[in-house]
Amino acid sequence: MRDGEVQFICSVRESPHRDGVEIFFYRSAYPSGDGMLIKVKGNEREEVPFKRGASLESSLYLDREEVNALFAALSDKGFAPEKDAERKGELRATKAHLEDMRRLVFVPSAVEIQEETAHDKG
Image (cartoon, rainbow, N blue to C red):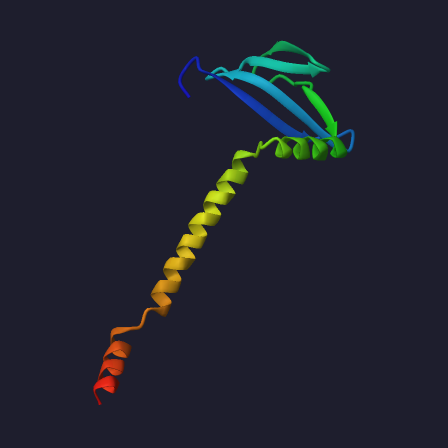
């Protein structure tokens, strides 16, 4: 990041008080780390300034059932986490690597080719 650049961040942590997650949405300025916490209540949003290192109240709390419902709804609409895309890319790369390895392992060696050729001539 460059000086003065603002980054949007979403951070999630397990709630220490309830069975769910606390979600933090905020904009942080580089390099100071000061920013704006985005509080969500219903359809309303409020941006609250904060200083780097300050203790923050979460933007939103969701219990585990709500988190699962949110993931399902987002998935139904075609949204997928970047990590999902990375995993698919890694899987494609792994499959390509395995195919390369199969070609190397199952390609007859020069000795085998010579033996087959000698056998065919004989």
